Amino acid sequence: MPSIQELEKTASQIRRDIVRMVHAVNSGHPGGSLGCADFFTALYFEILEHSTDFSMDGKNEDLFFLSNGHISPVFYSALARSGYFPVSELSSFRKINTRLQGHPTTHEGLPGIRMASGSLGQGLSVAAGAAMAKKMNGDSKIVYSLHGDGELQEGQIWEAMMFAAHQKIDNLIMTVDWNGRQIDGDVEDVLSLGDLRSKFEAFGWEVIDMEGNQMQNVVDTLRFAKTKCGHGKPIAILMKTEMGQGVDYMMGTHAWHGVAPNDEQLANALDQLEETLGDY
Image 1 (tube, rainbow, N blue to C red):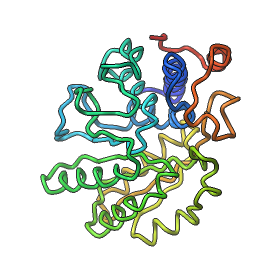
Image 2 (image 1 turned 30 degrees about the horizontal axis):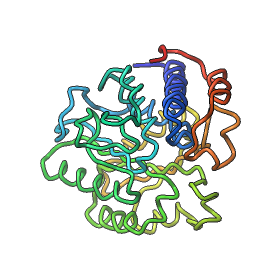
Image 3 (image 1 turned 180 degrees about the horizontal axis):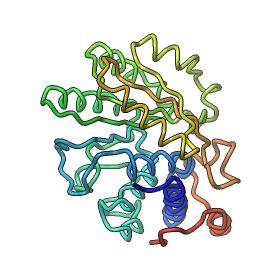
């Protein structure tokens, strides 16, 4: 079991991977990826009961679905660093005819990817279906999903929330990356989500708050969320993060939602992020 300090070091390396990947092809989404690095590290290196001997059905193991697929850099790095495929393959990110496309896809058979994502709003429906299937099959494992807060502006999310609560899908843990920013600006300005906690609770969900850039809190909260499974309600984690976390000039703005750093900016970012596991 890794210590909190070891998890923090892994998250730092994942952040290095992210900025290097998007810089190499001058394309990708560093902001949200950096903000979610602690979550992915805690999930894949501590919380998730999973196997790198990958199968699509995922029987008798926890499943994870990334709904906001544009933050693929952090997903790919976490998968590679936890052993799903060679770390060296990160150098193929967003290149033609490779498995690491800008949004995760399934047709190339990349281990760890069970759904194509990027069309926002769809991931919760998939996760709810997978969790319901586990319950029907007598599989006691948990299904996790991650969503952007801007994604909650999609109506399908709320339909899936109603469905999950109505069906008492209580082996489902949905996390919202609540960084307050989306591609066009602050979520509050684009389309306010109002009182998210009250809305989730009104839909019949168990709601938990999490500080998504504090590793100890991320680990503790995800562990706590697991204890809430099996009590008749799906679980929602409202995860407060900072877009661009770890790279000072990317923080506090939506400007780095989908912009790659240039050579000078990359060097600046890498100076701020400790290399702990070795760059690919």
